Image (cartoon, rainbow, N blue to C red; front, side, top):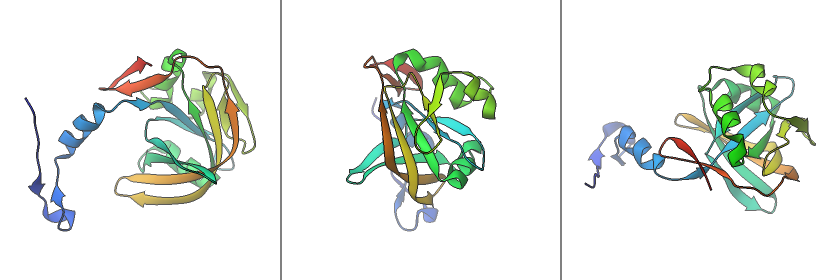
Length: 175
């Protein structure tokens, strides 16, 4: 059975409103690469699992990362002004769970898992990632419940070619 909804919402400033539960369900059906986004600096070391990562442009090379404003790691990332996007392989499934908060492991303790190094910014780079993009923040703004952060890529580390980890329908899968 197909479901659709577009009902007026006065808070939507004239735009038709959608049920957020229906939107989240729809987005759960979109497969996305799994990343661990990390940062380190004066505000401390932090990291989180993300699928909301995409290319902005290749000249200058830049990426867009979205993180909930309520996330503990968001403030450290914004204060440090640097981050690394580590693209996970299927072998990194357990690490994705650790950095997503599903295991109850928080803060610095997350970095006890995985093999970490650094590149130009000092942000943690995962040794087993498919590729890591070391970035400096060039723009950041709040859009509704999320920080939308654009980072200019300053270094890239290519990892071993192997199957990727993707997230769809609220589960990890191998691609």
